[in-house]
Figure 1 (cartoon, helix red, strand yellow):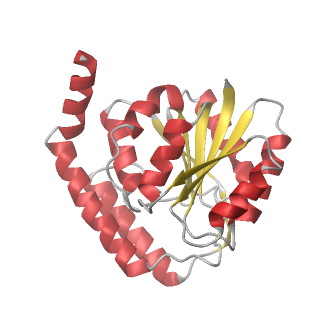
Figure 2 (cartoon, one colour; figure 1 turned 180 degrees about the horizontal axis):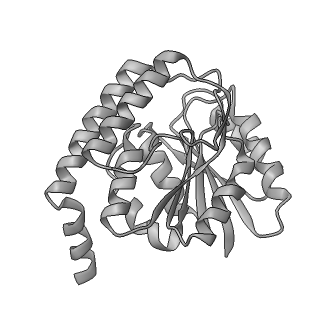
Length: 250
């Protein structure tokens, strides 16, 4: 069994995916334990898939999983995490805002603190921010996080950072329940994990704002808000715990 799986969700990332694969491949090759790299192409309409296929011919630990149609980042991460064969599975954004080497920081924290989920956080006094986001993104992120903590996830500083590590033995059942397709999936994943009794911790990371994002801020923020309200309603009505009870009976 692999000790670590790294999952890179990608949609129309032809400009950045090869660099992200090479960074992850070099990092994993230097580790002294079994690893794998999974790229989930979420129905890209550019050359992303071809680039990954070419890279897979050079990197034996690389697996490509392709959605024939775009399903959203949440579904891409879900696909990758459910396919992971590692004891731990990390998902990372291809913008490399958090250097892939920080996976070891999260892995050490998860193992020493017996956690099920480890979140890399930008909002800790020991985090190193090398290049900040534009002020508009910072404002939306901070306000959104305040709302998320107030409604659903008190105590968590940075639910939206795209660098999270999961112990697959305990969190596979979390991802089986994920329904959010878009950028609000982080909130649902963490809410389900907490609901099912998983231990969630945060650890500071190095972070640098990456250029080239295709994310449109206003629509994405509205999507996250909609998914936050839906997930809050489901938590309060016992939707996810009913699913867990049903699985246990089966």
